Image (cartoon, rainbow, N blue to C red; front, top):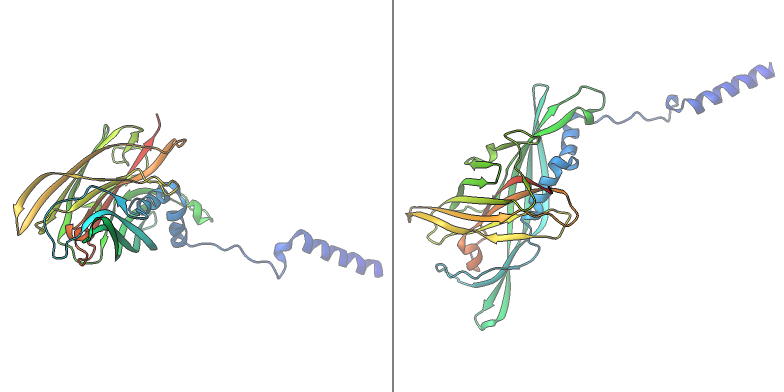
Length: 320
């Protein structure tokens, strides 16, 4: 009897060692919902996350940067800007997921950006004396990503993949008297005419409607059309070739090539061409080319608020 009792104890012990998942202390694996998985993929899958992080880095100058001083117009509290830059202090990200039917999901990514516009100016005492002023701002930016169901297995992480992405559209919360009404991009392989940025979708794969792909050194011609009621023309900056992993920043003032209208409504066109770049040792990068528009008084008036609108278009650069 004692031997039988000992044998029973041995088998019970062996059972709990070999099959620990059957014990009372075991925990079931956490199964994420489709909503949770899609939100996670926005930040983890390179084809989406790289573009999302690039647009944040592209509009962040970090500090005041050099540029040519403009002699345009007059403002109520004029200053002479020597350098300026946008410093992002905080970004809050939110994703709203809508699943249509059972096979397509659309994520709307909303970023609330707070920061400071830093302007280095020459003081009234002379050009050799510099002052620094800062303007607080809050911007909101939106971009959409479309996902397709590719499987129906127990692991939701393997059921979806991103297939399309839009441009990113952002701007300050203050009312502005200008708007970007048309964008044009010309590359050796693509021609894009964009009049409704949030409705402009790019396929993430290789197809006629895919994201523009350029070889290192190819040139891109970009043109922006602005509708404005401001008699002083805007500052329109072109930002490109910025990857969050590297410190490189490329910001160029676009040239106005056409202007028409009167005090009730002005139509202005700005243009710039640039050669694509890649960091040393990198074979491919996902970037955004960003049209960054600010009112004249944002930079040249120490009292006027910072008013801004920007649109970013995704593109890819690769070595031959």
